[in-house]
Length: 334
Image 1 (tube, one colour):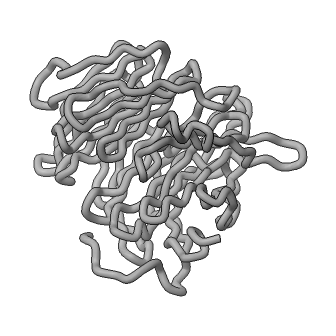
Image 2 (tube, rainbow, N blue to C red):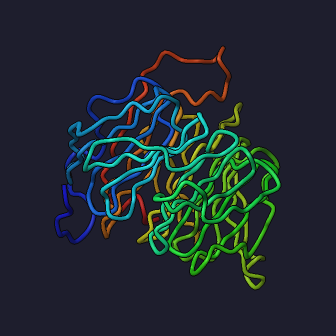
């Protein structure tokens, strides 16, 4: 459904709802459509699914494709008429909604961890475990550009003219996407263990990055603001340290969200360095998060299920699902 006009966040309706007919295995990635509340999800059950979501977080199953391999990332094309799925089989499949067909549009030498559409260039950016970033005009078989990195791509994000790529060596590569893609900055994270997620600041002057050590780091990229970078502990209790599986931003307010294998979702005022709210704890890890793209980023979606942080032996029997949260003022104001 398309957006309706509104003045702010949700009212007193139930702010937490489960999506209908969720995937049968871990939900790896989520993204809302650019111009509606349609929600796209990729899962380890080798499916890509779309639900129609309304302003009250009610959902209806809309479409599904079986893609033949576990899905590591998804994204929409800017016109909302196609979506992309990055797969463990080293390809990206494009799902054309008009014809309801799949077609391979990108490939790497190893599984593809990330995919992002760059609307100003009509290019798809992909990042792989082959330590390469590739840019694709999806109408041609060969990449428009290839950038070699020092290690495997573990996470990436694109926001307007900024791109960030986090690699296995704890480095973050920052790209300027204004004209042709260009590496403008490289920085080591302030975290000592494996990177799990990275997200551009809405102001495009830095990034948030999280790791398996129960910590998150907020890092600026200009020389003048490097001193303002800091890291903090989160998703810990008295006895355990949990992986911070995902970070995200409520773009209108720059509120940071962190999601952990402890089942907690925390909202933070990054500028004043304090927590604003905590959602009800889930019974399983939080695997991924995303905000709707309407003016108020009014709906927040998150995946719940086993994140494999404890290996095969730690596999739980709790169901994999997706939850929808209607954003409230208390989420973004301390």
